[in-house]
Image (cartoon, rainbow, N blue to C red; front, side, top):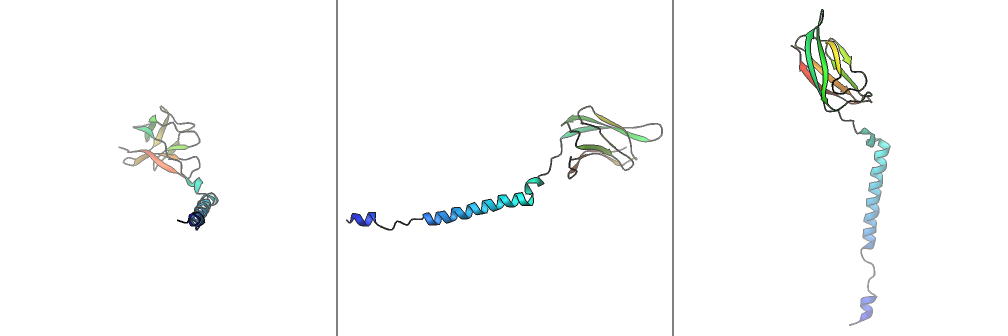
Length: 136
């Protein structure tokens, strides 16, 4: 057996192939990261709506049908996010932070329509109905 053949054989292994694969992988990852920053994809994550419960009380004032809406539990909604009670006749917003026990009163409505509590994110890009009920 010739020991020189074992020691002085082909010293090129698969390292050039692995090196090329690693270089391509690093390039692809860098391109994806830079592309997401340039295109602003990281900023497109939308704010999620709060999980809050509201109760509607339908009644009358002197001349019109009105609904009073009360936050009965769930998430407290910061003041920089708009929460409003909307009907086809009227719309009123909660003022300041909305937490359990806060109310909007005397929102006029028409019989049979849907009264909605709408939440809008601080940027105004996202909105969602938090509660709705059909008026009597």
